[in-house]
Image 1: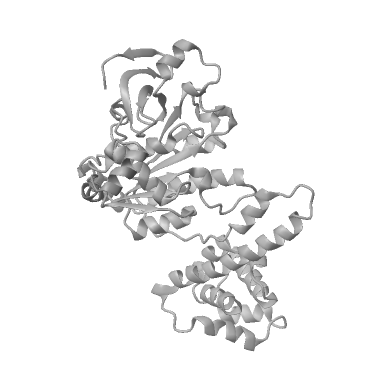
Image 2: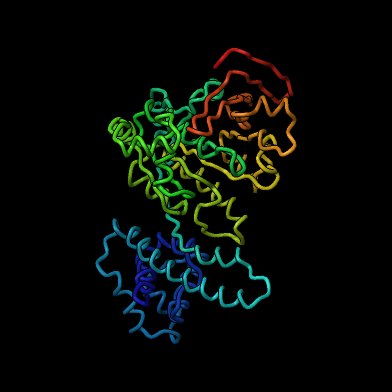
Length: 428
């Protein structure tokens, strides 16, 4: 680990333009050797004062605290490193260093916290999962490049990225790359089923590569649900027909050949790297609160950071993100009509999501009356809560709990800012 720390410092001394990457990712305490802490503090001071940085200046400033021989041993860790490789080299070394630092700090936190009557689990998890590297971005900000991008965007065909729910798609008029689409609901209100139905609609309408990050359920369980929706069968029928060979599995696999399914728990940075590596253009994340925590004072404060990073990822990676969001207890047991303020840190979610739909199931109400129970049996209420291109609107949907298939039943109503309401009884 000492050599890794040396490599990090040597790279930043040799390539001072990378110092923001160092300071974004590390503090003095992240370095185990006292000599490295001294070098870090010196680099930080010079950077803040906008002074020239090289190994000679560093040695002059820390003379007497660190021997010249030790500083030379630091600089040897990045000898002959070409400038073109410097950033990736630094990020690799920081990843190793931060991973170890996070584990050590997590263990220390456990030793301290578990001696207390009420351990601060949020703090333990936050520290233990803080091993994330923040990368710099490269961009040509000139007006000519921006105008060229506008012309390219204007000449592009529509993305064909829609939800598959006609009431919403008419109002949204197609999703564009760089946009974030939130799906909000309580547990057991079919959020995952909703995302699978959107996925099932998209897969035959777009040539874009799709990636589904199933942070909650295993890939095997997710695959079973996909087959239920695709074949419109119960899970038992899917199993029986798969075993008997009477299910057209070849057709299913061909249809979803451009889908990647990721079954581990990832941070936003991990997701971003996988999206870039695998050339993903449409991203599903199930769900926000299960994304690996990176930084912040508590689990809940991390939500703000995660949602902001996801929006930045959508823009920087030029992709569309469908993000599932678990509601707080304000959503009761899933039968209360969903509003944006039911999500933890709802202000940040509303600000960063371009579109949000809420899903609830009135049939779950323990005291539902007979008339409502009859109407809502086998149905979900789904509302477009935020639409940056127009009005909000609700569409009641049929939900087959056996197959997971969700589809509009036609009746819907709008709710614009001036509270005007209208009805449309034409089947969608």
